[in-house]
Image (cartoon, rainbow, N blue to C red):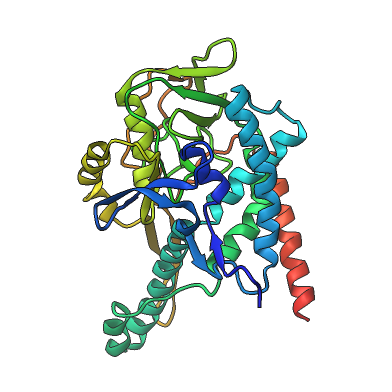
Amino acid sequence: MPQNKSHHYVPQMYMRLFARAGDNRIGVFVIDRRKFIPGAPIKGQACRDYFYGKDGRTERALGDIEGHAARIFGEVVRDRRLPAAASQDHEWLIFYLGMQHARTVGAAEQHNEGSEKVAKSILRTKAELEGDREIVEALDRVRIRRTNAVSELMSYTTIGASLLADLKLVLVENCSAVPFIASDTPVVFHNRHYEDQHISVTGYANVGLQLFLPLGPRLALFGFDAAAYEVATDARDIVLLDDPSEAALINDLQWEAAHAVMLAAPDMPEQLLQSSAATWSEPRQRERTVFREAVVEPSDNEMRTRHGSGAAPSAVTLDLSFVRCIPPQPEPLGTWDIPPFRDADRVARVDRTFDHMDVLDELRGR
């Protein structure tokens, strides 16, 4: 039995970016209780017992990744400079961003929600065709969950994180009166270019992708598709943000993505958190995934259907003065349209790697 049963899905080293120097306490806002705890011990936040299993292997591997990330974040905060593109530290940073995005309770719940909608639709269609009203009525009372959703997501991200490597990374220095906050789902994707679509266009390879990760109350990492946006920075490649409304917009991305708690500096003004909690109370109740279904080939004894699920579109209109969209606003996506990729060849190579992994899994199963 592993000694460490409490597995953090947001690393303690990351949460310390919001703590006072030398302290291990952080501000935590519990969303469903609307309660702010200004001095909560970091050790007890964003963790679950045996979240990554009981053999300890995944936890140890994540610990190694976190060690590299902790060193990089320390240098970034101190020097206000990101690792050079294509350097070893840049590769570690990209890998951490992908893994952190996939390893949380929020990510696992969204994965489960999409899978449940697809499974229930298939079962409902089958029961309706067979005239089984009992099954149809029971489905609304049933929960369907994947056996190990977080492990599946992390497996995909081990390869898929490479699709983030072409994003341009800059720092956003917050000089405004509204400090940055984070959540228990701190790596957030958005797409200003494809707002107002019927689905979220925030796949790792999508045109117009944007990435945000707060690095404390006064600094954030911003990644973006350089072919879709121009970003105004100073000579150090840093965005200087002094508009509190824009800092609040970036914080809104965290409120939208959060699973259960917001993370903040201990001296975060509670009234700002309470105000945002009231604003986000209703939007946070909506479903996180969009489900699509269409009948393809009906006949007297057979019905073929097409299913799809994806993240629901963001409710945030991310109008930031330092970001300018370059291409024209795209046409609305059709129900079954595939959002465009930044580099289709890279996506094809990654897909082939996934195929090879599936073959290896089949061989191991024999």
